[in-house]
Length: 110
Length: 114
Image (cartoon, rainbow over all chains, first blue to last red; front, side, top):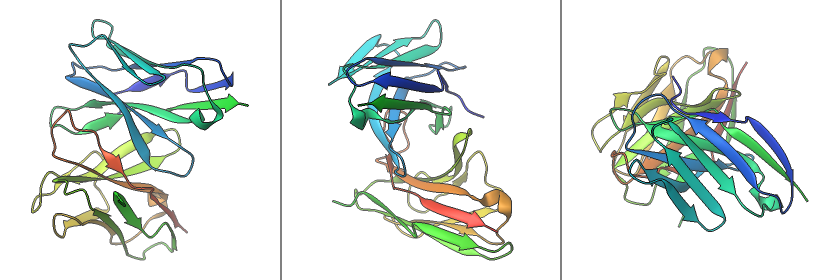
């Protein structure tokens, strides 16, 4: 079963706008990871946020984590056409295996 | 630096045929994984290998077998392919199987079973 669930499932924005997507999960976590997948390619790790962290930045990416609501958000600021991709959140199951959400497709229109 | 390499990139099989998907990583990682990705389903773990010499079932292991040939290579075998196994298969690796390790993915094998 999928631990993470992204929302919204699909997002279309203009270049330069910000894109926000959310992920909810069901059980307690030690950390949550976000991955990007470009069309026809494998997943690429973007950022990991630990359960004792509330916010983390990496370049134009900002991730927040609310463990009380069991949710995380990924914000991409000043989006570019190259940000067009699917974005997945992933949490760790009890035996240290990753459980991925179903993905959130982002289309950035030039 | 190749990272995770999967072969072949595309394959079409007939129902009942067998096939082995190959995966190799050059990052000296201990742990390796096989996932399948289907539309609307996200990624589901088929099998994983925490370290050389060990393999364990994931979420959807039925119809598959794996071999951790050495530290670098982890293969996935379909003994008798079925149309339900039509999917995109991804291999991944991580330094070790602990919960703070990002996984590194190959670019996938697109498999169609007719």
